[in-house]
Image (tube, rainbow, N blue to C red):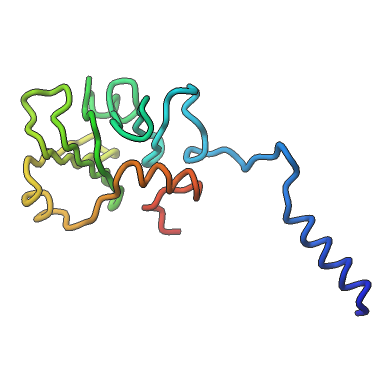
Length: 156
């Protein structure tokens, strides 16, 4: 193959890898927006997500969300600090009791989306005894998804 043919081949490959202006990647659960310009969305595992109006803090799960519906919660969790998804469970840590005065600070939830069960942990020691996993800061998970179009717990 002479220099001219190699140059054409290389240019063709480079051009085919580029997208034209206005093209966007295929939208999926992790890439779609919230539908509101002032609301940020943090997808966990389809169809469960959290939202916030003050990006990127004060993440909230409530009756408006699929997760809130699944767990029959008016305000399941406010001010979610960190989370993770593994073993078909959603792990959530809230550093504030939010709207539920009966729930102490430093509260952990383990949610099972398959059967809508919910386990509460009122101390880090009790939670870590059952689940010795590291949680992602919610804001870090949000930015990771925005940059990678997949959550940090997707190990594909």
